[in-house]
Length: 193
Image 1 (cartoon, rainbow, N blue to C red):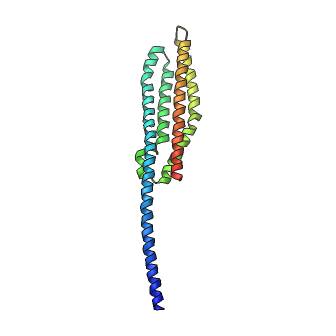
Image 2 (tube, rainbow, N blue to C red; image 1 turned 30 degrees about the horizontal axis):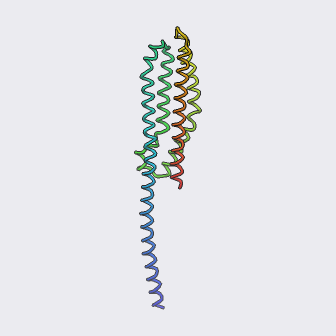
Image 3 (cartoon, helix red, strand yellow; image 1 turned 90 degrees about the horizontal axis):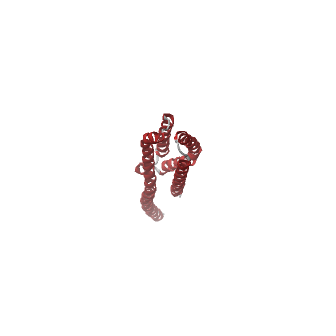
């Protein structure tokens, strides 16, 4: 009987050692997987960070060009003020959407927080059209009015140029939005796996 207890005790001790060994291996594997996942996510977030910075530059250039537009086309001060406020609002909304999702923050956040923040960013891009299209329509109508009101010659060449420019701008913006949503979807899928 005593011999059976010693065997059972030795077997239990052996099982504990094997369990601890497996537990340590799993913990190391989990840490490596988490680190690799975060590195992969960081590359995708770096692209989003770069695009965010470019959007600030575009808004800054648009604001800087407002005085020259006013001089060239005798645009009203109200239109220029509206354009500047529109660019500032867009820059603010861009910051608001991206505020919790940056490549530099990924190391400090757990994956659930990153997933929640990426989902919020994705939703921001989905909702972007709900408010940007109405503002763009108001702005486009106003700029058309300013051009027609202030040109002594036929406004059609200018209107065609504005139409082409706005079309290209919208296509670029929609392409960027689509790519950003796709990147967010990839990040969310990566985390959930």
